[in-house]
Length: 504
Ligand SMILES: NC(=O)C1=CN([C@@H]2O[C@H](COP(=O)(O)OP(=O)(O)OC[C@H]3O[C@@H](n4cnc5c(N)ncnc54)[C@H](O)[C@@H]3O)[C@@H](O)[C@H]2O)C=CC1
Ligand code: BAL
Image (cartoon, rainbow, N blue to C red; front, side):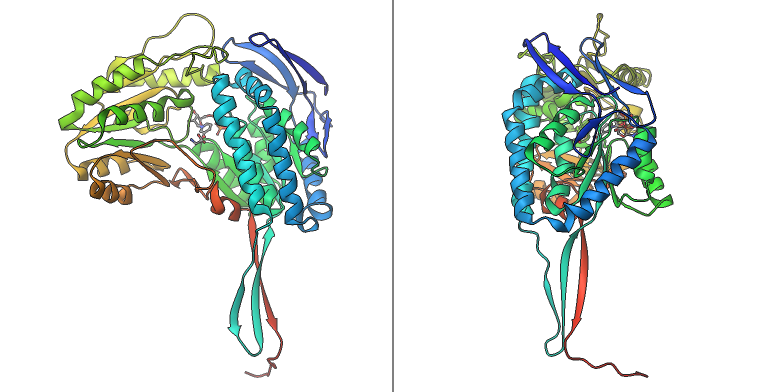
């Protein structure tokens, strides 16, 4: 099966023509040896949108071969930084041209509000591509003084090679850009495996990659189940780097597969259980707004969700009142309704998983102030749920829920707040709200996380590095550091005068 399907979006009247094959060597093709398909579901209605081809292990191998050939012949060191830059800018322009169409497809398959997909996810994507397009012709080595009279050493920033990239379903377009843009900017080639739950926009983006003029094989797209295509990429002997965003459990499997195969480089952006601390000096109204935004955005399906909120005893009751008022005003519904802020969660499996966490919170005796009741009707909708007076040993405080659920606890001193916040196996994000600048500096330095937000939450920028500590990951995305991950530094030692003698 490989064909073009026509997807009619009832809410807007738009019809989208989407190729459903694997994208290898700039062509949409069927699997070479399998009839397996993936069913793309609309999480707001639970209806199937269409089926797409599922890549087999053999298809993954063909995609890697295409990427290797492109790396050797048309991309890699064969193309100037100016040309890589030009093509990335062109791709950004095409995505911007199709921003509304891409957003509607994203909403159909992921459920998030279309205006948020368009203005935030895809707005960020366009900026990310332009940011790395700007870097592509500024990738420098350095000259290192070793001996002025006889020797010189210099470094060259080589592209690392063929990159397997495995992305999740929570930001299918945006995280695609975070991975593809730096890889292409330095001259790597890509085999991209989108999530089996949200393969549609990656296929649409593949069309734009071709239209932008990237040579065949530079970007290949292979929708597949994780344990088939994802595992095959992680274990492939001719993949030089695997970059992954998803759960910590799967990240560990990927690292193991990389170690057992060819010791490829591994970049992991994994889960979190991020704390958000509200001190008594904070602007409480703003702190409550950031706490809600930081946990409920994207229906809580966000690796940096600040889902553990710690509030100083003296302002606890006042803060809770403000928080609850804001949570209650969250409009949940179909993402094609412009009044909606939160869409459904991604799938039946995930819906059941989030409910499992809510039920465990109830069993463990946490008090629910809002939410916690199931809706009737179709769609994987979950109303925002707030647990208060939580204890540190509860499951809802320790495990990533990845849904619209907040756990609020209290503390009395700054030291206690830091202790509670850092008491986790994760280290992705952390937030603090305080009008005491000395306190904000002390606490931000003490928090054990890759990103700390002061008097805000969950705001990222394409030019600022992002990534985790502890079991939240390895390596960085975004910023110059995100580019460097795709570079293999070669040191060249040059002798123009020293004579060797033996024995020394
Ligand atoms: N850090 C983040 O942004 C994300 C975190 N998660 C967390 O993971 C939990 C489970 O969600 P899942 O969709 O099952 O996440 P997952 O980590 O299993 O899936 C993410 C990606 O990994 C791929 N994958 C799965 N098994 C693989 C394997 N053995 N080898 C290589 N690739 C593999 C999937 O096909 C998908 O593309 C969520 O409840 C959430 O807590 C999920 C998605 C994103
Ligand atoms: N909040 C950063 C995007 C992510 O969830 O991976």
